Every structure is written in C-alpha cells, then in structure tokens.
Image 1 (tube, helix red, strand yellow):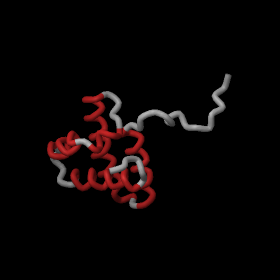
Image 2: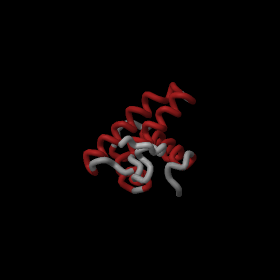
Image 3: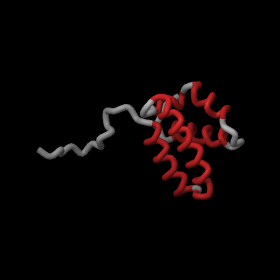
Image 4: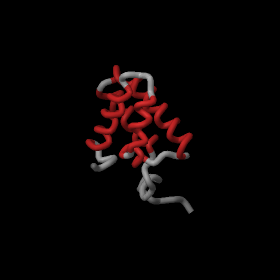
Length: 98
C-alpha cells in the first residue's frame, strides 16, 4: 500500500542539526548570497564534528555549552559570529525556542 500521508517524513521525529543548516543556507543564499560560503564551511564542519561525536546530531545541541566549546576550538575569527547568526535564525524561524 502506498503512503498517502501528506505530512513530510520528518513530522514527529526530532529535528536534526543538518536539517536546520540546510534550511539556513538556502535562506541565506536567497537573502545574502555573499555570506553563504563562509557560513557553509563553518556550519558543515560543526555538523561533521558533532556527528562524529554524537552520531546524527539533534538540533537541540545548539542550546548546549558543547557548541560554545566547539566555537572556542576553531581558528577562524568569524566562527563566533556565524554561530551567533545561525542561533538567531533558529529562534527567528522557530526551529528552537529560548
């Protein structure tokens, strides 16, 4: 029998960090494409590092101190600003609540 549900397959599942990153990069590319490359590099590395540590990383990790620790370990000075903008995006677009 075919699945006739109109709900996307992610409904009812915990959102993953990678889903929010993809959404953020699409929106960023539409609104401010000149920022896309650095955001993509930093957020992709964040996701890869956390996936290596946790498996598929749940989005709720963005509210934890582990991300702040990761930011401090990064050599790029713009990492903190990118993570701050991403966290703000998550709140503004209701991916997370405070």
